[in-house]
Length: 294
Ligand code: F6P
Ligand code: MN
Image (cartoon, rainbow, N blue to C red; front, side, top):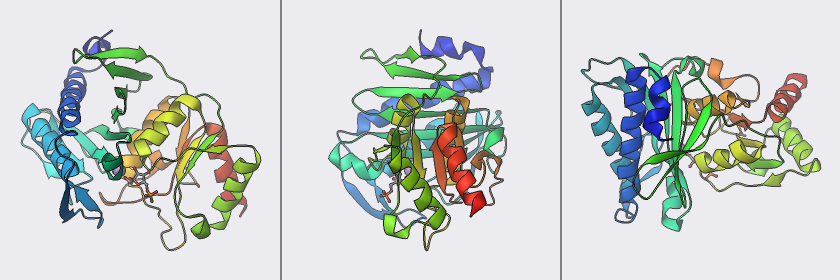
């Protein structure tokens, strides 16, 4: 089944938006071979922007502006929320190219999208849909519109074809632990030691979207915790934690900041960071229990 057929179960504007983004992601993928060079600018977080980051951002902004479906667009690469004159009322958050420091070494990166009706500065649980496109050996598109999590693969003819429907996160023993061990906070260290004692194996590539994708399929947990000196961690609530947390939650997992569900947090600003724990319910409950007891 093709993506466009699968999306017939969704509201029309949502269906058109997901299809529009799916097309933009084909354009982004096509840029990898020709746009590898670094640019010399930094984004609002002081991170070096790759030429591709900026270009992917521009591709999505211009396609979404032209779609007439989107009123608000928040991008990880933009300091402010963009507002478009539009008939539609959808709000989009995007990380145009997550994991982009890995482009130069040919590892998997992705595009992460959250979709709201209206205001994007809303708790993640109010999302109507979320999706990511992973550019690996294959290009895959994973989406939820609150009716299960479904995955499509881009075939050589340029069509997204259904690969797996109603994905459920299995039990597993992989963990993807971000940050430096010497800077872990005590509760986090205790939790990591517990997972290690249970035989969890490390799988951390440096691309959030790719690392969570593996965990969605094999089970386990991804974390980029708060750490000494940066208690709110590294990852961004709007662009990374919420959309991916929403998808994994829809697949039967959970998303937490180590104390509670990140999808319940009302964001105060677009650039808000959060500690992130995303994966199986058991692992998430364990960190929340440890932090509660501390
Ligand atoms: O977008 C931020 C990001 O690149 C994530 O994709 C990834 O999980 C993380 O940063 C890696 O951070 P670090 O380089 O500190 O391991
Ligand atoms: Mn990112």
